[in-house]
Each structure stands twice: as structure tokens, then as C-alpha cells.
Image 1 (cartoon, rainbow, N blue to C red):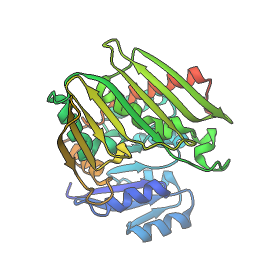
Image 2 (image 1 turned 120 degrees about the vertical axis):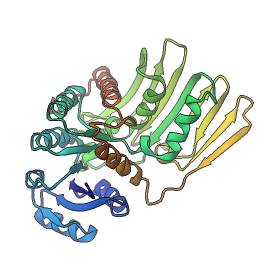
Image 3 (image 1 turned 90 degrees about the horizontal axis):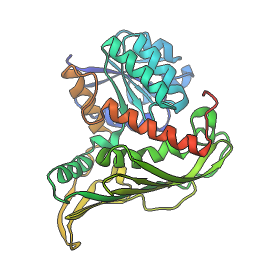
Length: 326
């Protein structure tokens, strides 16, 4: 295909950030946007230069011209939209957290496989150059064997009962919205933990904050603190037997990573300012996968997305946190 025709489901804050990058990526065509409100969809299409706008998700998903659909709705809606998109023959790129639970994700992955369609979680962190440089340093043994990872993600968010972040029926809570990032980082480097100790502050059916310790049979462990009521630097440290890697604040979108030796001397600093806003890298990864006929991304493999979802399922069971849809 000369250009990838993108369909965008949802017209909120994340969709706006994504489309800002989409407009700057070569080979991307801003083809169609779909919202539950026709006027909102039309205004969004005009603002970003989409060719078509639809007043419902189903209308967009029925458009056979759409090569891939990006889903940026509240998380509770992801499953139904993904299933409908795949049933109608659309490749899917869905925002994190991709579903409410692992059972939903397994059904999506099975359907995508049956249909021979591309499916991927939009975990932008894994596509960013700084993150990939960290992986390169780890793979090449620059810090030896990993013994400890610390990663935090917090935002002070004023409580609003109508905000999707605080509504259980929307898939709200810090776990699926922010905790998924440090969990993904730790899982990517150490895999599935052998033991997890956790504590969470729950209110009105969702977690407002939590603290996790993940332990591994190798002796390695990880510490994660996240939430909507904490003020943390949101950085990450990966410590090994021969050195360490430190991300700047907001590790999940950091443009800087530093490599230290075991005596804490700076060996190498990597800087990679975003060309647009950082979303361009995951868009380019989708283009690469589609051009290569891949049904998933090696950077964001289905198996990893599923295992992280299973970890989050386990945490919710311990906390007694269940979504209304379950």
C-alpha cells in the first residue's frame, strides 16, 4: 500500500496526541474518525484533516477503505470495539490497557489469529528510541545481571466521580491507566514474577494508589509505586551486577537514559528528543508491521501483553477489585 489509511475511534485527549503525530508521519493518511457524537467527530476531522467523519464507531468500522483502526476510547469499551473491528476485517491498534482482563484479551487474540489480521496494544513506551537503547545496553551485558528495578508512575488527579479514571464502569483506577507502564517495563526485563507483595488504596471500586514488590527466583526484585494521589518523580532505575541504567523523569516517555558503571560513574548518556511528541515511533512500527505482513509487533508481542494483563488480574483478585462488566 502506498499510504496506510488510518481510522481513529474516539476523539479525546489521547486521540489528539496520537493524531498530532500521525499527521507528521510519512506514509500515514488521516482517513476517518469515529465518535459517538457526530458533531464532535466532524469537528475533530476538520481540525486534524481527516477525509471522513462518522457519528458512530460501527459506521467507521464498516468502511472497507480503513487499513488499520486506532482505538482510543475508555478501556471498558476496548473489548467490544476490538471484536467488532476484527469481525469486520480491520487491523487493530488499541490503546493500553488493551482490555479489562486477560480473558477478554485471549478472545481478541484468538479472533485476530483466525482472521489473519494485525493486532497490537499501543504501548508507545516500547517503541521509543530511549527505551530501545536501554534494551540494547541490557542485552549486550553493559550492566551485567539485573538484580533490582525501581519504577514509579504517579499523577495528582483531582477526584471527579464523573471522570473515567474514577469510574469502575469505564475501567477506571490507577492499575490499568498508569501501573501498567512500570509493570510492562519490569516484565520486559525480568518476565513473570514468582511472587508479588502488594498494598492498594481502594475507593468506590477502583484503586487510587498502590505499592508493589515483585520477587524472582533468581533473587532479583522490583519495586513499583503508582497512583492518582501520590507525588513521585516517575523515574526508573535498572540496577545490575556491573552497573545501572537511569531514566529521566517520566521514564515511560523519557528522552534521556544514562548508563553507569558499578562505581556509579557515568559511562554513557543517550539523548533522543522526540521528532513530534513521541507517538510517531509506535505509528512507524505499525506501518513496518503492515508492510511486512506481520500480525503483531516484535516490540510489543501478544504474549507479553497477555502476561502483563494476567499479572494485573492477579493483583485485582488480591485487592478484591472487580469491574462491573466482570
